[in-house]
Every structure is written in structure tokens, then in C-alpha cells.
Image (cartoon, rainbow, N blue to C red; front, side, top):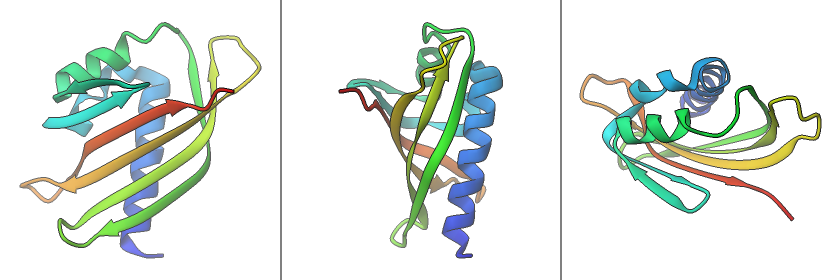
Length: 124
């Protein structure tokens, strides 16, 4: 398996496991210049992104990844990730379909962080 694929899949597993168990602790996965677009609304910086995600109006959530496609970005040694899946919210048994794109960038210490995050529910 290519390194970028492994990095992307490991990030997704960690991100969604953290989101589903304690989404208020997602801030360290972002940087101060990171940007989130959530259903058309934009947030910049790790703390603003974490606050938005923590304030979402549900108690329980479970992400089910259907597909996770990854590409390398050789110019910045980054990884582009496109995820499609199902979202189970609270006690609703009808899953919502979602799509999410992450761009992972290497930080100064060599660790990857999420530079860009775009999320959309697939409704209609």
C-alpha cells in the first residue's frame, strides 16, 4: 500500500473515532491556519473549528465510512482524502449520507495535520 493511502486511511480512522467518542478533542488535528467548510459555513483556526464541531446539535453520532479515496500532493508532500459514508445521529436508525474532503499537510515537526476540511450532507 502506498504511504499516502496509509496516512489517509489512518487519519480517517483516528478522526472519526475521536469525533464519535469526544469531538471536543479534535482541535490538535488542525492548525491555526486550517479551514473548515461545514454545510457552506466557514471557520478558520483549530479552536474555532473545534468549537463548531463540539456545538453540533446532537448527543450521539457514529460515522460509517463507505469509501476513502486518497491522493498524494507531491508539491507539499500532503495527502488529499475524499470520504463518503453514513452518519447515524442520536437514536435515529435512518442514516444520513455524507461526503467529506480533507487535505493533510506536514507540519514543521513532520506530523500531518488537517489544513482543509470540507463537509456536506448528501440530501435530496
